Length: 291
Image 1 (tube, one colour):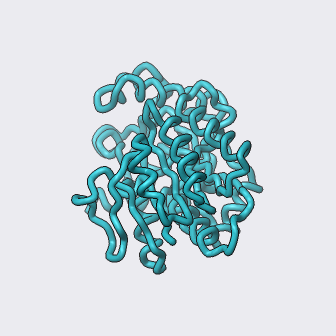
Image 2 (image 1 turned 60 degrees about the vertical axis):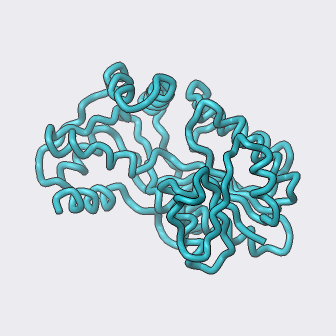
Image 3 (image 1 turned 90 degrees about the vertical axis):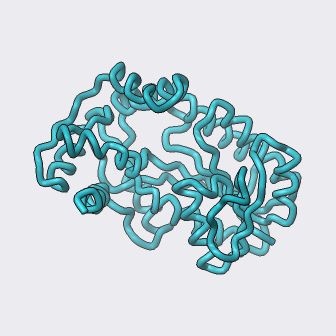
């Protein structure tokens, strides 16, 4: 029996695949282009698309455990719901689903609401799943090199309520732990949910200060202009995605997304260590840029 990993070539999925392979798991990596996928030794590339039910039926044959990561897309909900239904039909006994924090609350953010609908399916059908709810990724800010290093500006309009961002390495670590736990169990395990976050509730001002220390230069926060943010995203993304991300930033500004002490304690217990800090991420990233 195998573990099937969707989103296998992305920044989280690729880490999940590599860790599972290193631990000797039987891993299948779902990809649209199996002939081009650069995968670790021993990992089987499986051709398929989450919207192709026939291909997914074939990909799920002999699979015990599924890592379901569905990228932000207009048809994200269809992809996820169909895949879970097919996994149930195939007899999959362990699922790790990558959702998002505040999925039930930020109802005006389309990809949050899509993920909440998937969580409702898991709950209603009592699927044997671990739901991981990550916050905003540290690594999203690696794309801000130019404004940070050239203009001395932190431009993400996250507001001043506080967002407990998370390192994608912690997301991958948590996913692998739960995949192996479920894959190694003799029978299906009960559902469980984890909030994935970092130790600090970060604001635009605190993030600018962190980057100033990491870069050794003055860095200011550019403010919370959502019109400017949406326009900037539109230069490299479709209009629907730019608006979706604008809606997310609006909710961060209005409500924040602070992890509780209990959430962080549960995550630390799962990982066997405290979650990584944004300050360390910024320092290491700045060193990479300067090198």
